[in-house]
Length: 432
Figure 1 (cartoon, rainbow, N blue to C red):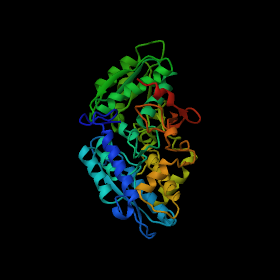
Figure 2 (figure 1 turned 30 degrees about the vertical axis):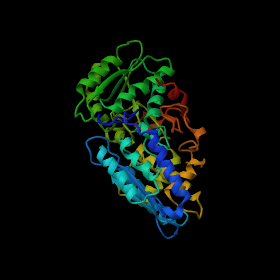
Figure 3 (figure 1 turned 90 degrees about the vertical axis):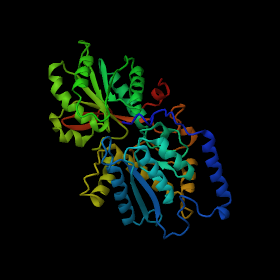
Figure 4 (figure 1 turned 30 degrees about the horizontal axis):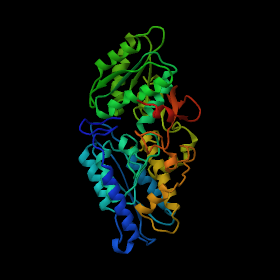
Protein backbone atom coordinates (compact mmCIF):
# COMPACT_ATOMS: atom_id res chain seq x y z
CA UNK A 1 0.00 0.00 0.00
CA UNK A 2 2.97 2.23 -0.34
CA UNK A 3 4.67 3.61 -3.41
CA UNK A 4 6.90 6.37 -4.71
CA UNK A 5 5.84 9.43 -6.63
CA UNK A 6 7.99 8.58 -9.60
CA UNK A 7 5.74 5.64 -10.44
CA UNK A 8 1.97 5.93 -10.33
CA UNK A 9 0.38 2.79 -8.97
CA UNK A 10 -3.40 2.86 -9.23
CA UNK A 11 -4.41 4.38 -12.57
CA UNK A 12 -0.91 4.73 -13.89
CA UNK A 13 0.02 7.66 -16.10
CA UNK A 14 2.31 5.31 -18.05
CA UNK A 15 -0.13 2.94 -19.73
CA UNK A 16 1.23 0.51 -22.25
CA UNK A 17 -0.13 1.35 -25.71
CA UNK A 18 -2.80 -1.10 -26.85
CA UNK A 19 -0.98 -1.45 -30.20
CA UNK A 20 2.16 -2.74 -28.43
CA UNK A 21 0.17 -5.40 -26.60
CA UNK A 22 -1.64 -6.36 -29.79
CA UNK A 23 1.63 -6.70 -31.70
CA UNK A 24 3.12 -8.86 -28.94
CA UNK A 25 0.06 -11.09 -28.95
CA UNK A 26 0.19 -11.30 -32.74
CA UNK A 27 3.86 -12.25 -32.71
CA UNK A 28 3.19 -15.00 -30.21
CA UNK A 29 0.32 -16.33 -32.28
CA UNK A 30 2.48 -16.34 -35.40
CA UNK A 31 5.23 -18.20 -33.58
CA UNK A 32 2.74 -20.77 -32.32
CA UNK A 33 1.58 -21.46 -35.90
CA UNK A 34 5.16 -21.73 -37.18
CA UNK A 35 6.68 -23.74 -34.38
CA UNK A 36 9.37 -25.27 -36.54
CA UNK A 37 10.60 -21.89 -37.74
CA UNK A 38 10.46 -20.23 -34.35
CA UNK A 39 12.05 -23.02 -32.37
CA UNK A 40 11.80 -23.08 -28.58
CA UNK A 41 10.95 -19.58 -27.44
CA UNK A 42 11.01 -17.83 -24.10
CA UNK A 43 9.08 -19.59 -21.36
CA UNK A 44 9.24 -23.03 -23.01
CA UNK A 45 10.57 -25.93 -21.00
CA UNK A 46 10.70 -28.23 -23.99
CA UNK A 47 9.25 -31.69 -24.35
CA UNK A 48 11.67 -33.72 -22.26
CA UNK A 49 9.90 -34.97 -19.16
CA UNK A 50 13.15 -34.99 -17.20
CA UNK A 51 13.59 -31.23 -17.57
CA UNK A 52 12.43 -29.11 -14.60
CA UNK A 53 9.54 -26.70 -14.83
CA UNK A 54 11.05 -23.29 -14.05
CA UNK A 55 9.12 -20.37 -12.53
CA UNK A 56 10.05 -17.20 -10.64
CA UNK A 57 8.79 -15.44 -7.52
CA UNK A 58 9.92 -11.93 -6.63
CA UNK A 59 9.39 -9.46 -3.79
CA UNK A 60 11.23 -6.58 -2.09
CA UNK A 61 13.57 -7.44 0.76
CA UNK A 62 15.69 -5.34 3.15
CA UNK A 63 14.36 -1.98 1.93
CA UNK A 64 13.19 1.13 3.79
CA UNK A 65 9.54 0.60 2.80
CA UNK A 66 7.33 -2.49 2.44
CA UNK A 67 9.18 -5.83 2.48
CA UNK A 68 7.78 -9.27 1.66
CA UNK A 69 10.61 -11.81 2.17
CA UNK A 70 8.16 -14.53 3.10
CA UNK A 71 6.76 -14.75 -0.41
CA UNK A 72 9.88 -16.05 -2.21
CA UNK A 73 10.75 -18.10 0.88
CA UNK A 74 7.39 -19.88 0.79
CA UNK A 75 7.73 -20.41 -2.97
CA UNK A 76 10.98 -22.30 -2.42
CA UNK A 77 9.46 -24.31 0.44
CA UNK A 78 6.50 -25.17 -1.81
CA UNK A 79 8.86 -26.43 -4.53
CA UNK A 80 10.72 -28.62 -2.02
CA UNK A 81 7.41 -30.07 -0.86
CA UNK A 82 6.10 -30.67 -4.38
CA UNK A 83 9.36 -32.29 -5.48
CA UNK A 84 9.42 -34.51 -2.39
CA UNK A 85 6.05 -35.85 -3.55
CA UNK A 86 6.94 -36.55 -7.16
CA UNK A 87 6.77 -33.08 -8.71
CA UNK A 88 3.93 -31.88 -10.95
CA UNK A 89 2.93 -34.50 -13.51
CA UNK A 90 6.24 -36.16 -12.66
CA UNK A 91 8.28 -33.02 -13.43
CA UNK A 92 10.54 -31.23 -10.95
CA UNK A 93 9.47 -27.70 -10.02
CA UNK A 94 12.34 -25.19 -9.97
CA UNK A 95 11.74 -21.80 -8.33
CA UNK A 96 13.97 -18.81 -9.04
CA UNK A 97 13.68 -15.76 -6.76
CA UNK A 98 14.43 -12.09 -7.26
CA UNK A 99 14.57 -8.98 -5.05
CA UNK A 100 12.95 -6.00 -6.81
CA UNK A 101 14.39 -3.63 -4.12
CA UNK A 102 11.17 -1.56 -4.20
CA UNK A 103 12.34 0.42 -7.21
CA UNK A 104 11.57 0.60 -10.91
CA UNK A 105 15.01 -0.55 -12.04
CA UNK A 106 14.90 -3.60 -9.79
CA UNK A 107 11.41 -4.54 -10.94
CA UNK A 108 12.40 -4.33 -14.60
CA UNK A 109 15.58 -6.35 -13.96
CA UNK A 110 13.58 -9.14 -12.30
CA UNK A 111 11.21 -9.29 -15.27
CA UNK A 112 14.04 -9.35 -17.81
CA UNK A 113 15.75 -12.09 -15.84
CA UNK A 114 12.52 -14.10 -15.90
CA UNK A 115 12.54 -13.87 -19.70
CA UNK A 116 16.25 -14.69 -19.94
CA UNK A 117 15.80 -17.76 -17.72
CA UNK A 118 12.86 -19.02 -19.85
CA UNK A 119 10.47 -19.27 -16.91
CA UNK A 120 6.95 -20.42 -17.73
CA UNK A 121 5.35 -18.04 -15.20
CA UNK A 122 6.01 -15.49 -12.48
CA UNK A 123 4.03 -16.72 -9.49
CA UNK A 124 2.88 -15.31 -6.15
CA UNK A 125 4.93 -12.11 -6.29
CA UNK A 126 4.87 -8.53 -4.95
CA UNK A 127 6.03 -5.34 -6.63
CA UNK A 128 4.79 -1.76 -6.58
CA UNK A 129 6.05 -1.10 -10.11
CA UNK A 130 3.63 -2.82 -12.44
CA UNK A 131 4.37 -0.69 -15.48
CA UNK A 132 8.03 -1.66 -15.33
CA UNK A 133 7.73 -5.40 -14.84
CA UNK A 134 4.62 -6.19 -16.87
CA UNK A 135 5.88 -4.76 -20.17
CA UNK A 136 8.84 -7.21 -20.31
CA UNK A 137 6.54 -10.08 -19.28
CA UNK A 138 4.07 -9.16 -22.01
CA UNK A 139 6.83 -9.04 -24.61
CA UNK A 140 8.03 -12.49 -23.56
CA UNK A 141 4.51 -13.91 -23.21
CA UNK A 142 5.05 -14.89 -19.55
CA UNK A 143 1.93 -15.09 -17.35
CA UNK A 144 1.94 -13.27 -14.01
CA UNK A 145 -0.07 -15.50 -11.66
CA UNK A 146 -1.22 -14.24 -8.29
CA UNK A 147 0.42 -10.87 -7.84
CA UNK A 148 -0.29 -9.10 -4.56
CA UNK A 149 -2.64 -6.66 -6.28
CA UNK A 150 -0.92 -3.43 -5.23
CA UNK A 151 -0.91 -1.87 -8.73
CA UNK A 152 -3.72 -1.20 -11.18
CA UNK A 153 -1.59 -2.69 -13.98
CA UNK A 154 -2.13 -6.11 -12.40
CA UNK A 155 -5.84 -5.73 -13.10
CA UNK A 156 -5.32 -4.60 -16.72
CA UNK A 157 -2.52 -6.62 -18.31
CA UNK A 158 -3.54 -9.56 -20.53
CA UNK A 159 -0.79 -11.69 -18.96
CA UNK A 160 -1.95 -11.03 -15.37
CA UNK A 161 -4.07 -13.56 -13.47
CA UNK A 162 -4.90 -12.05 -10.04
CA UNK A 163 -6.15 -14.37 -7.30
CA UNK A 164 -7.55 -11.67 -5.00
CA UNK A 165 -9.12 -8.24 -5.33
CA UNK A 166 -5.94 -6.41 -4.36
CA UNK A 167 -5.92 -3.16 -2.45
CA UNK A 168 -9.13 -1.97 -4.20
CA UNK A 169 -11.21 -4.77 -2.67
CA UNK A 170 -9.61 -4.38 0.77
CA UNK A 171 -10.31 -0.65 1.01
CA UNK A 172 -13.82 -0.92 -0.42
CA UNK A 173 -14.56 -3.74 2.01
CA UNK A 174 -13.12 -1.85 4.97
CA UNK A 175 -15.35 1.10 4.08
CA UNK A 176 -18.40 -1.16 4.09
CA UNK A 177 -17.36 -2.65 7.43
CA UNK A 178 -16.76 0.72 9.10
CA UNK A 179 -19.77 2.44 7.55
CA UNK A 180 -22.04 0.39 9.82
CA UNK A 181 -20.24 0.95 13.12
CA UNK A 182 -18.21 4.18 13.06
CA UNK A 183 -18.81 7.83 13.65
CA UNK A 184 -16.23 10.11 11.98
CA UNK A 185 -13.49 8.15 10.18
CA UNK A 186 -9.92 9.49 9.96
CA UNK A 187 -7.54 7.85 7.46
CA UNK A 188 -3.75 8.16 7.81
CA UNK A 189 -2.01 6.98 4.66
CA UNK A 190 1.22 7.41 2.68
CA UNK A 191 1.74 10.59 0.69
CA UNK A 192 2.35 8.59 -2.50
CA UNK A 193 0.56 7.82 -5.72
CA UNK A 194 -0.64 4.53 -4.25
CA UNK A 195 -1.79 6.37 -1.12
CA UNK A 196 -3.75 8.88 -3.20
CA UNK A 197 -6.16 6.12 -4.20
CA UNK A 198 -6.88 4.86 -0.68
CA UNK A 199 -9.45 7.51 0.33
CA UNK A 200 -11.26 7.07 -3.01
CA UNK A 201 -11.75 3.35 -2.43
CA UNK A 202 -12.47 3.67 1.29
CA UNK A 203 -15.08 6.33 0.52
CA UNK A 204 -16.76 4.01 -1.98
CA UNK A 205 -17.34 1.51 0.82
CA UNK A 206 -18.46 4.16 3.30
CA UNK A 207 -20.85 5.64 0.74
CA UNK A 208 -22.47 2.23 0.19
CA UNK A 209 -23.53 2.35 3.86
CA UNK A 210 -24.69 5.97 3.73
CA UNK A 211 -21.66 7.24 5.67
CA UNK A 212 -19.94 10.56 5.05
CA UNK A 213 -16.50 10.67 3.48
CA UNK A 214 -13.28 9.98 5.34
CA UNK A 215 -10.97 12.66 6.77
CA UNK A 216 -7.84 12.12 4.68
CA UNK A 217 -4.42 12.68 6.26
CA UNK A 218 -1.12 12.20 4.46
CA UNK A 219 2.15 11.04 5.99
CA UNK A 220 5.66 10.47 4.68
CA UNK A 221 6.17 6.97 3.30
CA UNK A 222 9.27 6.37 5.44
CA UNK A 223 8.47 8.46 8.53
CA UNK A 224 10.03 7.45 11.84
CA UNK A 225 7.31 9.00 14.02
CA UNK A 226 3.69 10.11 13.60
CA UNK A 227 2.94 12.32 16.61
CA UNK A 228 1.35 15.04 14.49
CA UNK A 229 -0.78 12.60 12.53
CA UNK A 230 -2.04 10.74 15.61
CA UNK A 231 -3.17 13.94 17.34
CA UNK A 232 -4.96 15.19 14.24
CA UNK A 233 -6.58 11.82 13.59
CA UNK A 234 -7.82 11.59 17.17
CA UNK A 235 -9.26 15.11 17.03
CA UNK A 236 -11.19 14.31 13.85
CA UNK A 237 -12.37 10.89 14.98
CA UNK A 238 -13.73 12.29 18.26
CA UNK A 239 -15.41 15.34 16.70
CA UNK A 240 -18.90 13.81 17.08
CA UNK A 241 -19.60 13.13 20.77
CA UNK A 242 -22.73 11.15 19.89
CA UNK A 243 -20.93 8.34 18.03
CA UNK A 244 -17.61 6.58 18.54
CA UNK A 245 -15.23 7.40 15.70
CA UNK A 246 -12.59 5.28 13.97
CA UNK A 247 -8.93 5.86 13.08
CA UNK A 248 -7.60 3.96 10.07
CA UNK A 249 -3.79 3.74 9.75
CA UNK A 250 -3.00 2.29 6.31
CA UNK A 251 0.78 2.61 6.30
CA UNK A 252 2.05 -0.86 5.47
CA UNK A 253 5.17 -1.71 7.48
CA UNK A 254 5.00 1.74 9.15
CA UNK A 255 1.62 1.06 10.78
CA UNK A 256 3.30 -0.20 13.94
CA UNK A 257 5.35 3.01 14.15
CA UNK A 258 2.11 5.01 13.93
CA UNK A 259 0.53 2.88 16.67
CA UNK A 260 3.42 3.64 19.05
CA UNK A 261 2.45 7.31 18.91
CA UNK A 262 -1.25 6.49 18.92
CA UNK A 263 -0.95 4.40 22.10
CA UNK A 264 0.50 7.40 23.95
CA UNK A 265 -1.84 10.06 22.58
CA UNK A 266 -5.15 8.24 22.73
CA UNK A 267 -5.33 8.57 26.56
CA UNK A 268 -6.11 12.29 26.16
CA UNK A 269 -9.19 11.72 23.96
CA UNK A 270 -12.51 9.91 24.16
CA UNK A 271 -12.42 6.27 23.08
CA UNK A 272 -12.11 5.53 19.39
CA UNK A 273 -11.94 2.33 17.36
CA UNK A 274 -9.05 1.51 15.07
CA UNK A 275 -9.22 -0.35 11.80
CA UNK A 276 -6.95 -1.27 8.91
CA UNK A 277 -6.38 -3.84 6.20
CA UNK A 278 -4.41 -7.05 6.53
CA UNK A 279 -0.89 -6.34 5.39
CA UNK A 280 -0.75 -3.27 7.61
CA UNK A 281 -1.47 -5.52 10.60
CA UNK A 282 -1.28 -9.28 11.09
CA UNK A 283 -1.26 -11.78 13.94
CA UNK A 284 2.51 -11.67 14.43
CA UNK A 285 2.39 -7.89 14.84
CA UNK A 286 -0.44 -8.18 17.38
CA UNK A 287 1.54 -10.81 19.30
CA UNK A 288 4.71 -8.69 19.32
CA UNK A 289 2.87 -5.62 20.62
CA UNK A 290 1.21 -7.26 23.61
CA UNK A 291 -1.45 -9.66 22.40
CA UNK A 292 -4.59 -8.89 24.44
CA UNK A 293 -2.97 -5.67 25.74
CA UNK A 294 -1.90 -4.64 22.23
CA UNK A 295 -3.10 -1.27 20.89
CA UNK A 296 -4.80 -3.32 18.16
CA UNK A 297 -7.25 -4.93 20.60
CA UNK A 298 -10.81 -4.50 19.25
CA UNK A 299 -9.42 -3.24 15.92
CA UNK A 300 -11.29 -4.12 12.75
CA UNK A 301 -9.48 -5.46 9.71
CA UNK A 302 -10.43 -6.47 6.20
CA UNK A 303 -8.62 -9.30 4.43
CA UNK A 304 -8.85 -11.35 1.27
CA UNK A 305 -8.84 -14.74 2.93
CA UNK A 306 -10.11 -16.56 6.04
CA UNK A 307 -8.40 -15.79 9.35
CA UNK A 308 -4.95 -17.36 9.73
CA UNK A 309 -6.29 -19.71 12.43
CA UNK A 310 -8.84 -21.21 10.01
CA UNK A 311 -8.44 -24.94 9.33
CA UNK A 312 -8.39 -24.27 5.58
CA UNK A 313 -4.77 -23.17 5.99
CA UNK A 314 -3.74 -26.50 7.55
CA UNK A 315 -2.03 -27.84 4.41
CA UNK A 316 0.03 -24.68 4.02
CA UNK A 317 1.04 -24.85 7.66
CA UNK A 318 2.04 -28.49 7.20
CA UNK A 319 4.25 -27.57 4.24
CA UNK A 320 5.92 -24.77 6.21
CA UNK A 321 6.53 -27.12 9.14
CA UNK A 322 7.97 -29.85 6.92
CA UNK A 323 10.04 -27.71 4.58
CA UNK A 324 10.79 -24.40 6.32
CA UNK A 325 10.33 -24.92 10.05
CA UNK A 326 13.32 -22.75 11.01
CA UNK A 327 12.82 -20.07 8.32
CA UNK A 328 11.58 -17.03 10.25
CA UNK A 329 10.90 -15.13 7.02
CA UNK A 330 7.72 -17.16 6.54
CA UNK A 331 4.77 -16.03 8.63
CA UNK A 332 1.65 -18.10 7.81
CA UNK A 333 -0.51 -15.14 8.89
CA UNK A 334 1.08 -12.80 6.33
CA UNK A 335 -1.33 -12.15 3.43
CA UNK A 336 1.66 -12.09 1.07
CA UNK A 337 2.64 -15.62 2.09
CA UNK A 338 -1.00 -16.68 1.80
CA UNK A 339 -1.26 -15.15 -1.69
CA UNK A 340 1.86 -17.04 -2.79
CA UNK A 341 0.33 -20.29 -1.55
CA UNK A 342 -2.84 -19.70 -3.54
CA UNK A 343 -0.89 -18.61 -6.64
CA UNK A 344 1.10 -21.86 -6.61
CA UNK A 345 -2.16 -23.77 -6.20
CA UNK A 346 -3.27 -22.13 -9.46
CA UNK A 347 0.05 -22.92 -11.17
CA UNK A 348 -0.17 -26.58 -10.16
CA UNK A 349 -3.73 -26.86 -11.47
CA UNK A 350 -2.78 -25.21 -14.76
CA UNK A 351 0.19 -27.55 -15.34
CA UNK A 352 -1.82 -30.62 -14.36
CA UNK A 353 -4.49 -29.63 -16.87
CA UNK A 354 -1.89 -29.99 -19.64
CA UNK A 355 -1.40 -33.69 -18.96
CA UNK A 356 1.47 -35.08 -21.03
CA UNK A 357 1.45 -32.07 -23.36
CA UNK A 358 3.97 -29.28 -23.69
CA UNK A 359 4.52 -27.18 -20.56
CA UNK A 360 5.36 -23.62 -21.54
CA UNK A 361 4.34 -20.06 -20.82
CA UNK A 362 2.10 -20.24 -23.89
CA UNK A 363 0.30 -23.44 -22.92
CA UNK A 364 -0.13 -22.35 -19.28
CA UNK A 365 -1.63 -19.06 -20.40
CA UNK A 366 -3.88 -20.82 -22.91
CA UNK A 367 -5.18 -23.13 -20.16
CA UNK A 368 -6.03 -20.16 -17.95
CA UNK A 369 -7.62 -18.18 -20.80
CA UNK A 370 -9.82 -21.09 -21.86
CA UNK A 371 -11.63 -21.11 -18.52
CA UNK A 372 -9.68 -23.43 -16.23
CA UNK A 373 -11.52 -23.48 -12.89
CA UNK A 374 -9.28 -23.69 -9.84
CA UNK A 375 -10.49 -24.70 -6.40
CA UNK A 376 -8.41 -23.36 -3.51
CA UNK A 377 -10.06 -25.41 -0.79
CA UNK A 378 -12.37 -22.60 0.27
CA UNK A 379 -9.60 -20.02 0.73
CA UNK A 380 -11.13 -18.09 -2.18
CA UNK A 381 -14.14 -18.69 -4.40
CA UNK A 382 -13.41 -20.96 -7.37
CA UNK A 383 -11.06 -18.97 -9.60
CA UNK A 384 -11.45 -18.58 -13.36
CA UNK A 385 -10.24 -15.92 -15.79
CA UNK A 386 -12.76 -16.05 -18.64
CA UNK A 387 -14.04 -12.67 -19.80
CA UNK A 388 -17.42 -13.35 -18.21
CA UNK A 389 -15.73 -13.92 -14.83
CA UNK A 390 -14.14 -10.46 -14.76
CA UNK A 391 -15.37 -7.31 -13.04
CA UNK A 392 -17.51 -5.03 -15.20
CA UNK A 393 -15.42 -1.91 -14.69
CA UNK A 394 -12.88 -0.12 -16.86
CA UNK A 395 -10.67 0.48 -13.81
CA UNK A 396 -10.07 -3.19 -12.92
CA UNK A 397 -11.02 -5.32 -15.94
CA UNK A 398 -8.92 -8.37 -14.92
CA UNK A 399 -10.31 -8.56 -11.37
CA UNK A 400 -12.13 -11.88 -10.92
CA UNK A 401 -12.30 -12.20 -7.12
CA UNK A 402 -14.06 -9.36 -5.29
CA UNK A 403 -14.57 -11.32 -2.07
CA UNK A 404 -13.17 -10.09 1.24
CA UNK A 405 -13.40 -11.17 4.87
CA UNK A 406 -14.25 -9.01 7.88
CA UNK A 407 -12.05 -9.66 10.91
CA UNK A 408 -11.58 -8.20 14.38
CA UNK A 409 -8.96 -8.51 17.14
CA UNK A 410 -10.44 -10.17 20.24
CA UNK A 411 -8.32 -11.26 23.23
CA UNK A 412 -5.24 -10.71 21.12
CA UNK A 413 -6.40 -12.91 18.23
CA UNK A 414 -7.54 -11.98 14.74
CA UNK A 415 -10.87 -13.75 14.33
CA UNK A 416 -13.76 -13.52 11.92
CA UNK A 417 -16.13 -10.64 12.60
CA UNK A 418 -18.61 -12.03 10.09
CA UNK A 419 -18.96 -15.55 8.77
CA UNK A 420 -18.00 -16.23 5.20
CA UNK A 421 -16.97 -13.85 2.45
CA UNK A 422 -18.39 -10.43 1.59
CA UNK A 423 -18.50 -9.57 -2.11
CA UNK A 424 -17.63 -5.93 -2.88
CA UNK A 425 -18.06 -6.12 -6.64
CA UNK A 426 -20.91 -3.61 -6.74
CA UNK A 427 -19.03 -1.16 -4.50
CA UNK A 428 -15.99 -1.29 -6.79
CA UNK A 429 -18.14 -0.82 -9.89
CA UNK A 430 -19.72 2.26 -8.30
CA UNK A 431 -16.41 3.76 -7.07
CA UNK A 432 -15.80 7.34 -8.27
